[in-house]
Amino acid sequence: MRKTRLSDVLFLALLFLALSSCNNGPAPNGNSAPTITIASFNTLHLGWDNGKDLTKMADVLMPFDVIGLQEVMNEDTLKKVRDILKQKTGTDWQYVISARTLGRSSYKEFYAVLYRTDRTTYTTNSADIWNDEDDLFEREPFFASFKSKNFDYTIIVMHSDFDSNKEVMRREARLLYSVYSRVQARNPNEKDIILTV
Image (cartoon, rainbow, N blue to C red):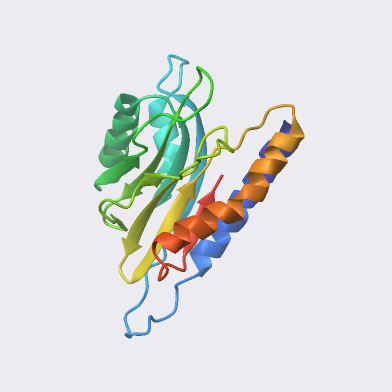
């Protein structure tokens, strides 16, 4: 378990550095492109009565502009986190949430993307759940598109199946290229697709 968590932290750190360093130069039209920070967090059953301190959680989320969230158990608690972020930052925050819970068993979760409206805007009607007609994923990936000034991008949020059968994880990892390809095919002009796991 420790190796998995360490690798997740390293991946997020590299993603953070890569995204922070991109789009710092002038855009083709001469305007400066914004620098935005994108993160991904497993919220560990956000919404269950598990003693989670939502204020401390907001403190962790606050430095980021756009955040992919896994294990959102209900929308009411997500709204509370959003409202705490608004209060702490003095800035409007909004979210996009999957249209339904995802999972094969009795355990199901929502995905969400939480974002600062002064840094990015959601592209209306762009959120969707990947069509997993062959039931290949434990929890189908969720995606939504956003725009920060002249930088438009799509975020894919996924919670991979981390059970004891490593082949399940490998199979889902091998499928990610298909997910990317089909999401990109919906909008061939979209070249900036960010996968958060």
